[in-house]
Image (cartoon, helix red, strand yellow):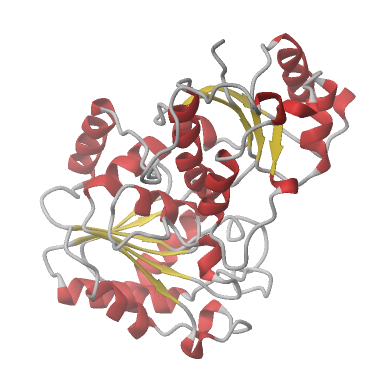
Length: 346
C-alpha cells in the first residue's frame, strides 16, 4: 500500500494542543508516518518539536483575515495543492478550515471532521480527538487497513524533553538559586490575564485573588519549608506574579515570567515536586509531564477540559457546592492547600 501521511488541522490554545498529542500519537501508530499539522500560536512550534508523532508544521497567523490579505493562508493552500493525497483529520468545527482544504484541492472523501462526529455528553476534549483519530476517510474504506492498526491502550500526552532541555533547565535553576530543594510551581495567570484592564474584571473568569495565592504560598512554605516556590507565566503576567510574591512576604519565592520558554517549562515540570494552577495551558503540560497537579476550575465543566483525564496525579478544585455559576474567587485557599497536600508523592 502507498505510504500515507495523515494531516491534522487544529487551531488551539496551548492546553488544546497538549490534549491533541494523544491523537497525533494514535495516527502516527496507525499510518506509520508523523502527522503534518496545520495550527496557529507561538507556543505550537516549540511544543510540537518535542512530539515525534508531529511532522511538518504549517502555522496560520489569522483565520479571520481575508484570504487575499493573509500570506500564511496562501502558503498553506499552495502546499496543500502539491501535497500527495492522504487522510485529513479536522478537529475544528469552523467553516474556514474546510474552505482552505477545498481551495487546496483536497477531496472531501479524504476528510474526517468533528462536524460529523459530535462530542458525547461529558466527553473530554482529548477523548473526542482520539475518537476522531479512529475514523477512516471514505477514500480508504474497503482498502487494506493502515499498517499500525489500533492501540490497546490510549497514548499519553507527554512531549519528549531533550537532554539539551534538561541541561538548560538545570543550569537556569542553578543561576536562579532554585536548585537543591523541592520545587513547587504556581501558575496564576492565563490568556485573559494578559489582556488590558483590571485583573478583577468580570470577564476574567479565571482570576483568583493575589491574596489567595499569597496564602497558598505561605501554607506551602510552612508545610514544606525546604521547598522553593516558582511563580510561572508569560512576560505579560510578570506584574501579577510580582504582586503575589510581594504579598506572600516569604523567602524562597521566585518569579520566572520573563525567561520561561516552553522547553524550559516542560523540563521544570518534569522534575518539580508539584504545581498549583488555574485552568490554563501550563496546567495541561504539567499533567502530561507527570507533575502532581492541583488545578482550579470555575464556570466550566471540568470533565470537558480536565488535563489528562485519567491521570492519578491531578486534583481538581471547584467552588464549594460545585456551583456552576460561582466564580473562581469562590474557591477557598484552604481547599487548594488541602488538595495539594493530598497529591501523591512524585
